[in-house]
Length: 137
Image (cartoon, rainbow, N blue to C red):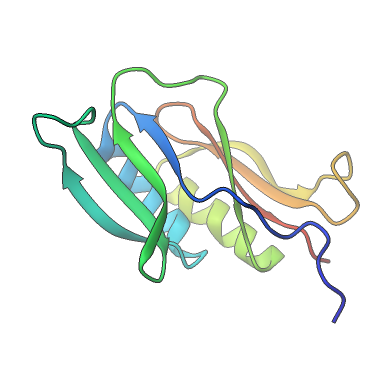
């Protein structure tokens, strides 16, 4: 098998601020679930913490993606999750739409990125651009 030249990342984790964690969970849990990414932690910060509530998603035991309760959301934020197959991209997109996300771009090949880039895009309740992407044929 030829190694995937588009695979890999050195980012350990990412916090994304949302205005209503519970409303966001209604979309993130089913959409990320089809990619094997599960809700692992859900906790409220203490008086010395700079957050109100954080929910961590990951595979196995380690969260790598966090939803953080806040008031300000970056309107240009785009988060792309790796999908193992093109079918998984389609399933992510369908699950997100069924849970209330808004469609941005139905799953398709995006040759403007590279010849095998297959992505599906939705907006979460705060307008965050979520994507599932597969780099394989």
